[in-house]
Each structure stands twice: as C-alpha cells, then as structure tokens.
Length: 199
Ligand code: HEC
Ligand code: HEC
Image (cartoon, rainbow, N blue to C red):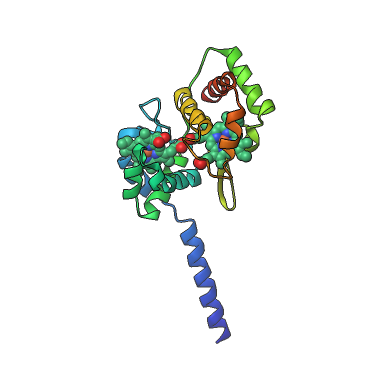
C-alpha cells in the first residue's frame, strides 16, 4: 500500500518535471511561421528597428510577449499579436526555437567608438554585471534575469535605450533600465550601441 502511494507520488513529480522541460523546438519552428514576416528567417529581422530573436534568452521572449499583451502597450505593433498568442505552450516552444538559433553578427569600422562603448559597458556603468561579459544575457533557476543585448542592429539598440531613458519603455526587474539610462549621456549611449551591435 505504502509502495503504491510512493510510486504515485514519483509518477506525479515526474509528470511535472517533464512538463516543465517540455518546450518543443520543432513545434516552435513550425509556429514561427507567424513571426517570419517581421522577424525574418531564422530570427534575423529585415527591418533595422525590429529586434532579432535569434539567440535571445527564451525566458525573456516569453516575458516580453506577456508584457506586450498589457493595455499599456497599445501602441506597439506586438500588442495585437500578443493578445492572439494565448496558448502558453506555443509561446514557450517558439521562444525555445529562437533561443536555439545563432545570433546575428554585424561589424563596424569605427574602432575608436567601439573601444569607447566597451569602456562604458564594463567600467563606467557595469552593464556586464546583468547582461554578461559576452552580452548574451543571463538566466538563473527562476528564469531569465536579463536579455541578450548583442546580435541587434545599432538602430534597434538606440531606439530601446532612448525609450528606457524617457520611460516610454518601462523595464521590469525593479525599473533598473529606467533608473540607469537618464544618467547616461547621449555620447555614451551612442558608443554603447556601437559597441554592442558590432560584437
Ligand atoms: C507585424 C509584425 C510582427 C510580427 C508578425 C511579429 N512581431 Fe514581434 N515585434 C515586432 C516589432 C515591430 C517589435 C518591436 C516592438 C516594440 O518595440 O514595441 C517586436 C518585438 C518582439 C519581441 C521583443 C524582442 C526584444 O528584444 O525585446 C519579441 C519577443 C517578439 N517580437 C516576438 C514575436 C514572436 C514570437 C512572433 C511570432 C509569434 C512575433 N514577434 C511576430 C513586429 C512583429
Ligand atoms: C541591474 C541589471 C541591469 C543593468 C545593470 C543593466 N541592465 Fe539592461 N536590462 C536589464 C533587464 C532586466 C532588461 C529587460 C527589461 C524588460 O524587459 O522590461 C534590460 C534590457 C536592456 C535592453 C533591451 C534589450 C531588448 O532586446 O529590447 C538593452 C539594449 C539594455 N538592457 C542595455 C543595457 C546597457 C547598455 C546597460 C548599461 C548602461 C544596461 N543594460 C544595464 C537589466 C540590467
């Protein structure tokens, strides 16, 4: 009797574990057909102001879609779409698929601006403490703590950094990005975007 109960408990906990890790990359790839018109093939967007999803932290993709669904995001192109994405497993699968793809690579000949941006990223504002030395973002056992900030165009990075600076984009994680950006000069924002987009 006791053994039977024990087996049921194990079976139940296994079912939970399997479910938690069930993100299905193949199913996500099929579902990504809905995203290709704007986010491009293999998650590299054709539009310079549309973010690349390739290589992005899956947990961040899931959380961003949940945020886009909120009424406050009404002026974003993603708002209407996010409201249609109401099956959590579709979002988890498509996020796992994009997270598995190699990130974009851009280059810039402006070595001195890249060098200046690197200093701001590591020394002046210590962005690397949240976004990682490689800029790939970070996850812990509770989920994603910060997004990938490399593998994006300079235009997109500038747009987001200025959106945080003016509170047009409200950052989760204790408003961290909104607290930092107002103190970053325009010159340093330009250097940061140059550095990150060229890594
Ligand atoms: C009609 C065009 C369009 C389609 C289709 C679309 N997106 Fe987007 N997406 C955008 C735009 C534009 C942005 C930038 C929005 C903003 O900053 O308000 C964006 C932003 C995002 C972001 C934020 C990325 C970041 O780095 O912060 C995620 C995540 C995302 N989209 C996921 C998806 C997924 C998954 C799909 C398919 C299910 C999808 N999108 C389909 C246009 C689109
Ligand atoms: C304390 C942690 C922390 C620090 C320090 C930090 N960030 Fe962030 N950053 C975040 C979090 C969390 C988000 C996601 C916010 C959200 O989705 O609401 C983010 C988002 C971003 C984004 C948007 C990414 C996208 O795909 O839309 C960029 C770009 C960015 N940070 C760059 C920087 C830069 C440059 C610095 C240094 C000046 C910096 N961050 C410092 C935590 C941090």
